[in-house]
Image (cartoon, rainbow, N blue to C red; front, side):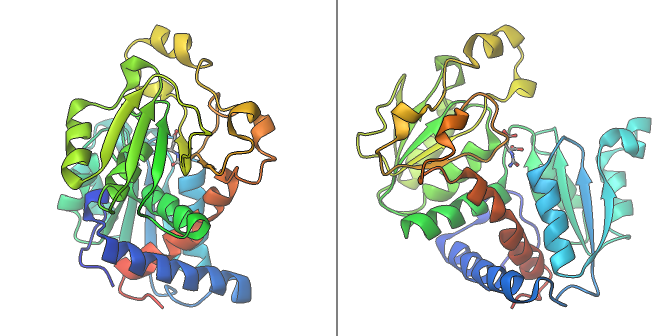
Length: 306
Ligand code: NCD
């Protein structure tokens, strides 16, 4: 079980909690294989509020709820709800909490998850709040690294190419910074380097951090974690256009290395499709772990985990 009702930020995820979630995720993966669906949440209703576009996060939460036999209520865009008429986020949550037992929300505004969780009387999961955080993606990433590297410490991780605006990079680096001897190399356009606040936060947790304009991936890195330039978060579209194709993993940069290649997806320009056939290209496998990880989270937050 979890020591909190709502998951808003990766800062809540201690190594002990992460290992509990990984163990429960393993149970869920076995259950998917053996039974397909289990009667764990058949008396519960999950609310899915997606006020920003989503494919993997929304569908893997849907699939997780279906496999746990929970009922669901949805809002798939702000324009399909009374938010379009000017209703506040707080009032929306006050209504949805009475229709459901747990709320999952994605919202374009950084900080909206904390506001919604503070309002909600039922457990709440942040499925991405603007460019701020994406803690459930960080758990999927941690699960992938634990499965395929066997550890979450002593890692040399490259992060690119939009560490400033990628909520997935923010949450994963926050999660990994708590483990001993992790070293982060941030790379990408200079304008998209991590903020000083972010770097100070990671260093204060014990991570070693550096920023470099280019990396040679055969220099003994364990993981290269890339995310597309976050087009919708650019104030200057010209900056996005000038950089979108400059930073790209190609076969020659990654083949023959032991580096696990991860990406929360969607893939836009940051990985050449020729990389997909390499044994260390794990991004689609990583996306598949979304279902058992989210089954674990839903059932643990509702006090019903196996
Ligand atoms: C990410 C997101 O929404 O932040 N995708 C995801 O949830 N798997 C990454 C992105 O949109 O670039």
